[in-house]
Length: 161
Image (cartoon, rainbow, N blue to C red; front, top):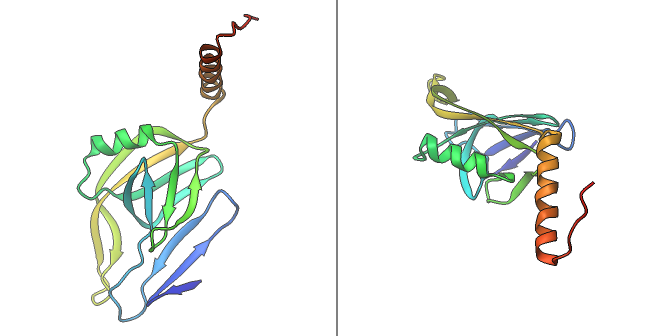
């Protein structure tokens, strides 16, 4: 656990590829530390425990802000890297080994926090995106595309096997 200003940050890292983060609010304070996730050049606020990716995939839960569902889906489909940013905008985790699973849901009534004074839940809209490891067919198609590009650029004919 570390403190950034008045906020206590708790990080669990069970292995190198799966981490779970959440922020704690100090008693009597209203500020929260919010991690962000960068997807295809656009940055979104993660909810508490919103980064739920392990070795084989998982999901991320984030607040879309003013970004539309369609725009988020385009960003996810084009994403080649997921980067979790700390409060200063520095990368904490970067993942390039996962692909978007094609499942995005929106929840308009998700508990995104708690009011420090009243203890009541704070409700807000979130999007939940699922990721998975690429299967062999996708990896093979990527290798074939690279080989076709090298063949085209070098003008060396390749033999069919």
